[in-house]
Structure formats: structure tokens, C-alpha cells
Amino acid sequence: MPNPASNANAKGMPLAIALGDPAGIGAEVVLKALAQWPAGQANPVIVGCRSWLESQYLLLRDCSDAPLADPADLEVLDLPLQQAIAPGAAGAAPPAASPPGPAV
Image (tube, rainbow, N blue to C red; front, top):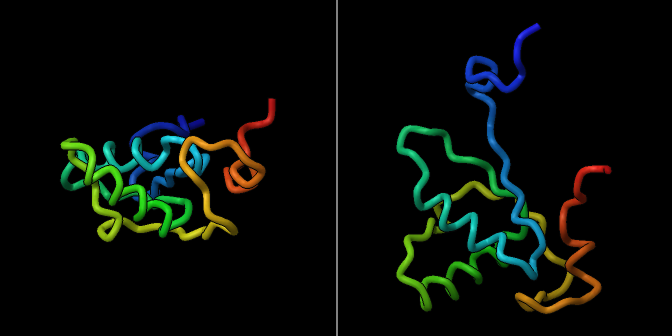
């Protein structure tokens, strides 16, 4: 039986990256990581709210010298938020807007 995680089996398979909790640091982590994405590798599909990702990009760009991927260059499976989310603020919406974690 082949190893499902082997490179041979993964070639051509898209990678999806969830932005996570909209009140968390997911956008920062994703934008910084994708700024270092290897040339020649297929870009991953980002799953989350495009407008939230873009707003976080603008905030980070203005307060950090770290390289960031531009959301305009990314493929995003857009899942718009139903209400505005303040980063770092707890509320009822973030858990509903976050993808569910694995069952334990």
C-alpha cells in the first residue's frame, strides 16, 4: 500500500491553508509564510474571508518590515464573514467563523 504522504502521491495535489480564527494571528502567519514560498512550487489555496485577509495585509504592511505575500496574488476560496471581527477581541462570531478542529 503506498504511503499517502509521499511526494509521488502529492504531486499535482493542491494545498489548502485555512486562515483560522478571524480574531487570531492566522492572516499574519499565512502572509509571512507565503512571502517565503519556494519559486516553482504551486501556490496553495487560502480558505477564509478575502476582505479580512486584505485588511490584515494593509495593517501589517504599515507596521512591519517583514516580507508579506500580497493577497492580490493569492488564490482565495472566499468565505465572507457575517460580521466584522476585531483582531484579538473575543466574541460570539469567531468560533462560528473558524473551521472546526479535528474530533478528539
